[in-house]
Length: 265
Image (spheres, rainbow, N blue to C red):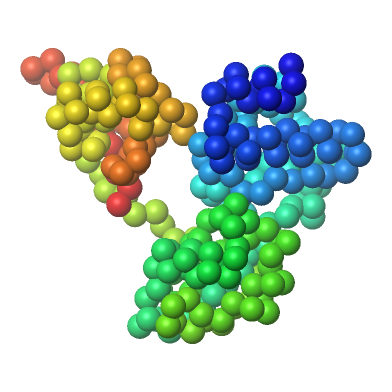
């Protein structure tokens, strides 16, 4: 099956199709030239689609690594390995660099400020991974191809002055994800029922949201409102946010199922 047919089979279009085509290119490059080959940063949705694609073409899991610079990174790259490179020794071939942009604590630039500043310098989004904003600095995971340019050319975000330096991945400042615990009961573990609780919607509106294709279950689009969820599943929806079904409890006296949600804020 050729590349176009493979991408058609997964229903990929637009930027996602281009990103996944590059995944196939890098996998082929590593195999054909027998050298390490890495993609740019992929979104969680693109990463899941890439995993589906690689399984479809029969690429073994031992042939690549997913890396984002730290455990739990949202945006990650695929590093494809030649047959002479062991997974445990692949760290030195990682294309990821960490830059720390320090600022005055009272200035308080946001994630949006940093991203807008980078786009203003002509940096495309796929060259930048997670942006971890702290009280007086932000750690950015970037492709090594743009790291030196940013070190030499990036001095501000809006009116906020920055001091940009290179730091080792082992010295990353990783903020704790802001989540709130929500305890609720649902009539069933169907996606629409749990989404209604997580997004504070009426059951009918949640079902319509799912059927419109705007809801993702574990980073894959899901249009089946009756899909049954399990503990650990992550549900997200454009414009509504994201939550994890953390716990499934027993039945209440009224026959409803108690659940615990971790809602990202």
